[in-house]
Length: 199
Image (cartoon, rainbow, N blue to C red):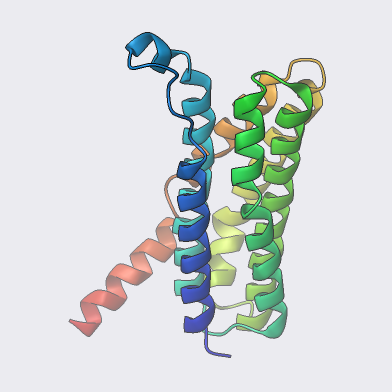
């Protein structure tokens, strides 16, 4: 199956989710920096959520650029991933209204963990569809598996500790983003070489 429609659909959905996310930001109660400072936690959780979506979009772009084909399985797993990402505005808003609340923080962590697992499943399906010698399969083996294990371990630990210290869940989720800030270098190199060859 052609992958372009799936990529375009994913881009559009993530853009909408990001838009909803920013619309959930509250206005300060008064025209003062003191009132603005009172919303610092809301801005923090917004930043974590926005970066999460941005990192997913960026890595999704690279992962699908490294793939030649998609299957029905890939499409449905990608839809499942988008469903999980679409819950970020809700969990972000809930956390913003209940600072350091156990249930909102845990739900945020659970959604993050589910999205991480969904990401792994999409990657595995792409590897199956494109073959063991494909660029995507090589990228997943070289760094994707390690990054995913670190992310899942961090978020899982954050959820466990968050039962007693709610803020730990948000901190763990934020830390889990670090390995994914820089996309896979092998894919970057291949895309650069491809662009040079076309030029």
